[in-house]
Image 1 (tube, rainbow, N blue to C red):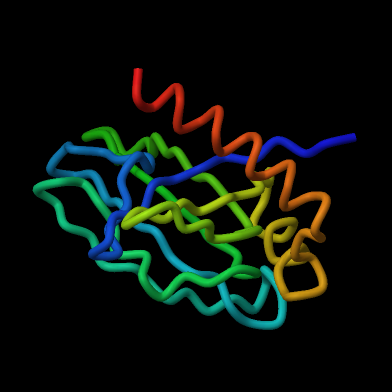
Image 2 (image 1 turned 120 degrees about the vertical axis):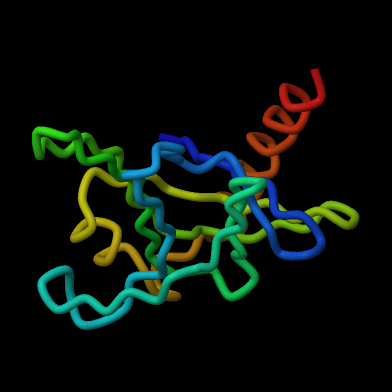
Length: 143
């Protein structure tokens, strides 16, 4: 059984786009590295955002990290509309001047934090599978 990966392009300056984003004035956006013992005792290290290009600086992200990405909007009535996604970084693959984050998507922050660390990094066979999926991603990106 092969795992499906999500890929995010990282430019040479460390900036990456394509994450959930809310452009409303009451909206808030974040991408952070989740550290700590578990999801109940989490510390978040935020990645800085360039609001003009809607890109995050992911230069301090490394394989084995758990990521939380969110875009929230609070309506005038007080209701929260949110889009939160949780990932663990499986690998960072360099192709020329561009790098790609190979991400495993998880349903909760607790699942992402349990799958972080070097013991959950892919082996050689899984890295070959990631390369095949990345080639398909790049081909679709260029179209």
